[in-house]
Length: 110
Length: 329
Image 1 (cartoon, each protein chain N blue to C red):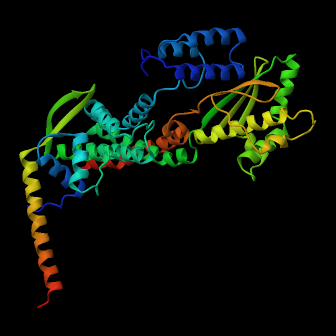
Image 2 (cartoon, helix red, strand yellow):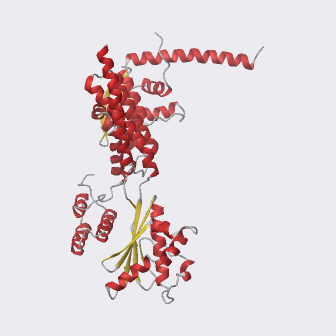
Image 3 (cartoon, each protein chain N blue to C red):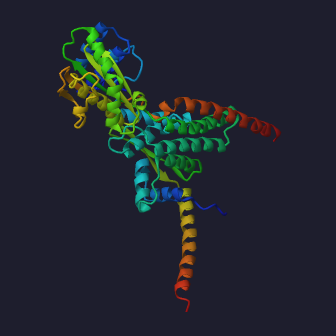
């Protein structure tokens, strides 16, 4: 089965959740950290992506807690979400391995 | 806004200023104003302030930054499908409030765009999920509506919310209403406004300044200068310039037709309650700038509404071939 490559925000959301269940703001903060501050997901984009991932069965609802009178809902990776991320990581690492080999040839033609 | 929240001195002052402005506009009699001011000064909660404003049009007592921000976000979240809102609204609001900057009191432009696009994407997802019949129709129409709202945003952007600053000048025991009227006439006269315009910007025309200030008389003993601008600072600057120019003029009244040149060199800073150095004026009190209207959706209201109607029509039209196609399969 060939699937289209995950878009970066989706990839980062799945990566954030791979460490365990997190709530919306936690995912946003984690993504900013993982990407070294390069990607800052805003709430509207985050929830549109989460909604799609839930429809596709890659993430699911974990639990909710109330903190300071405000609702926090936690999300976690489903087994198929974990597989999808693993497949993507394999594909990416094959690509980066090729790129690295070719770059080495470029700098060291002998 | 929760009526049980406790009101602060600043909230009471703002409400008093709003009541005075309504009196100036002729919506309250003098007795009504006095009664309501008394109620305002003894108000403990926002509910009390709301009751004092009661039947008057316009925004209620100024909301705290947080609740104003929350209201702005809820308005944007209303663009999401009802089913999504039932599950996610409170949660998304919590994330938005946590991510908001310190002291932020309305959704930013980028956040607004992000939420609108997010709402559109969620609606499209519901559509792709193969929601049948009228559900699908509603989803399409509402997606069109969101597109229309999106088109309304530029209208809101070119029509930014106005801020208002009100400065009250208490006159020294005017002998007669006629004299107070004369003082008001002086405050709105060409020489005073021309000088005020120069205080703001050398090239500013009196006509341009007139569109930013409104000068009226309150209770035959106070001149009320209302400055308006796209920012709090701009509204403050307009009101201050007129007040400074007027003060300079009346402290130089021995020269009829004088333009207050003697004081032009060092304009007085008006703020809080300052004792004025002009003989005609007892004191000056200046309110904090307050918003005329509070958010992008409100100011762009008409444009957004038209956009939404057009969007809904497009959504409904897009539905026709879709239903035909469904019938064929």
